[in-house]
Length: 231
Ligand code: AMP
Image (tube, protein in one colour):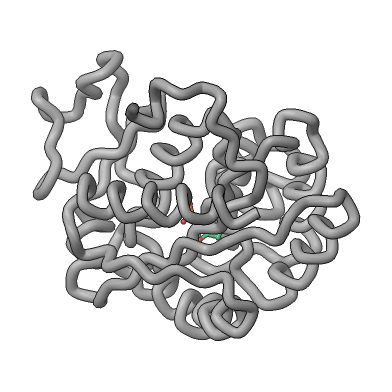
């Protein structure tokens, strides 16, 4: 029976998506969260919401995000802790874009221990920079539902319009080539050490992110099913 038809299938742990910008984390993380009925926590989406609402945090984060740099841990950690502590995360949650530094990963480990969560497992999407560039420059996101398209590989039926709800599609300001270079550099310097960090903990599951969305999805579900059984 398909996972979608089994609302009782609980993951009961956190899942971390690790991979460079454009590796498909957002697309796949949403699929996994939907299938298991657990929250999808994207720190990028949370920060963009703060920016949109011009909160204190949003005003601090905006110029940093526009440059493609990482927002300081001091701002991100409190935001994610408050979210993970909400009761809807008690049967598991999907983290997309967090942790992004070793400090964030250590903090997350402690936070989950404190709250009695099992150790999280990591889906690591691996792929090279030429594919990433094409994905990022072609990415368009629905303003209403957040659905992600790509003008080269997965275009909407009508240009600029979401197939699902007719919402307007937008090009993220940090998906422009000069900012992309900065974001990829931030990944290499600050986030890629997490690959070894989680590998040493035995938590890392590598998936070839250059494969098609359905192929990556199938492999991801297989890993999740195995991790569900590994109590
Ligand atoms: P994303 O949507 O995950 O690509 O994130 C967009 C931007 O938000 C990043 O380029 C960072 O500026 C900021 N950001 C998102 N998540 C984090 C995080 N965990 N730590 C620091 N900055 C973050």
